[in-house]
Structure formats: structure tokens, C-alpha cells
Length: 211
Image (cartoon, rainbow, N blue to C red; front, top):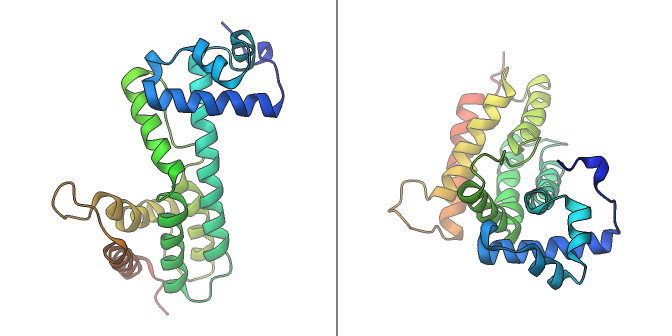
């Protein structure tokens, strides 16, 4: 069994080339049909180098998945910093955050790639641990909700549950079409209306009431 100590660090350029080639081939061919020989040839390295860097094909797939998730995490953290750090208008801040996530993260090519990679993993690697990341978006959002609770802006003694409710009412509902006919895709105006409604419902439950 290959351990982390056995893997070579390698140059960041070579690693990037290998990950780029692997991502393309995993998306095109799936995990089972993608070949390490083809990945190595496309990235311009030897197959031995690819194995030295990532251990095996599953290790390489995990590295591809982790890179996509890391890029999405950056978008999520940026949306939080832009909207939920210095909060003066709670309604506007939550609305701005949800809009930013829908456009910069969930509307990005990285998100589409992530969902396809997770689908591939679920089909070809049923025993693999496939999660968004170690710190899920709801966990990051929960930390901000905990701060807003302490500041007296939200009544959220269980900030993680509040984060789950917020995501369900805004982002998840927008992605699934919110009760529209199956297969329907929301346009920009419909998405924004759904986000507004979700923020309004969330605040009815979680806005801190004046004493």
C-alpha cells in the first residue's frame, strides 16, 4: 500500500499538468475507462512519474476532486468576506451572499465539474468517501451565523442548523427549480426572486427580535 511518505512532491507545474489531463479524461471517459497511460501521455510525463506523485488512479482522482473543491471554497470564502463580515443591513447582506454564491460558485464551471466528478465517483467508486470538503460550505456559513447571533442580529443558538436552513431555502431551492415542472431551468429573474423569497422566510424564523 502506498503511503503519503512514498509519494514525491514533484514540481507544481508537472502536478498541474497531470491534474489537468486527468480531469479531462475522467470527465470524458469516467474513472474505470480512463487510463494512466493516456493521462501521462497527455500531460507530458511518464506513467511512473504520475504514480510517484499520486500513488494510484484513485489517489489521482481524489487529487482532481480536491483541487476543484478548493477552487469552490475560495469563491465561498470570498462571498462571505464580501457580504457577511461587516454587516450593517442584514437583509441586504444575506441577499448579496446568496447572489454571489449562485453566480461565482454554483453557477461556475467548477461547480458543474464537481457535480460530474461526484457522479462518476458514486458510480465507479461506491466505497470512496466523497464529500464537498472537510469544511463544508454550511460549516463556514455557520461560523458567520454564530457571530451574527452574538451580535444580536440573528437568533441562532444552533448556527449550523440555521446555515442548513438558509442553504435549503435559497441555494438548494434555486438549484432544484423550486417546485417548477421537472427539468425546468430557472432564468435569472426567477432565480433572484426565489433567493429573495428564501432570505425573507429565513429571516422570519431567525431574525433577532428587539427586547
